[in-house]
Amino acid sequence: MTRRQWMGLLGAAPLAGAGQTLRLRARSRKAGLVNEHELLWRTSETAIIICDMWDKMYCRNATARLGGIAVEMNRVIGAARQLGVRIIHAPSSTMDVYAGTPQRKRMIEARPATPPVPIASWCYLDRKSEAPLPIVDSDPCDDEVPGEKVRIYTRQNAALEIREPDGISDSGVEMYNFFEQEGIHNLVVMGVHTNMCVLGRSFGIRQMTRLGKKVALARDLTDALYNPKQPPYVTQRRGTELVIEHIERYWCPSVLGSDLTRAEAA
Image (cartoon, rainbow, N blue to C red; front, top):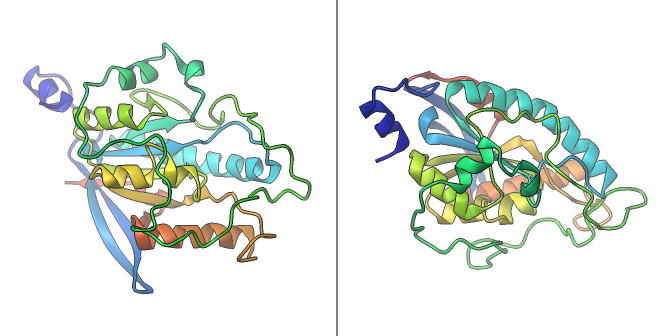
């Protein structure tokens, strides 16, 4: 029995947005053709995963783009939260900063669930499931003079508000447990970087798709770490678009963040 069912038996007030439906304009690709279709997802069965929206990175241009995305992302998640969509903040490797918070504790304390497939710490590109990425990202920073590739992030970007009843986790196991406990079947992934963590993390698109979740990428709230000096020698923005198209073809549809800001009665 899910938490919502227990609440109903106990006569507790329903969660915000109960009984509402998101109408998402989804875009996918097959055989070179673009397919636009509609997804109808109940807000109470939907969560947003915010992937690795850190405060800073070694690549200055990437940090600047991330900061710009964060402002619009905060508006989107604020509206989605009011509709009853659960917000999961996932700034990887910074969990110590959030230790003891209600948002962190609820993810740790979620009832264990048995996944249909193993949850890997990282899901690498699988040639059986997808073609190679359309960009080369072996030297991905597009700064004129790239800095040393070292960790300088410390927490999530300050522009992103963490509120109740959000969750904080960088673990695919914790998230899967929480989603199963709460009856969450639909996931929208947003954040950075499209060609790396958004796809490969234990809570990323590849893993959550393999776990049987219905997944979508917020294509206007993501960014690739790509240097135009590498193949296919396109702009950084076009490099991001190419990775989004790759995801739409092999993994899941993409949607617009604005579609997460409004819902209608189910």
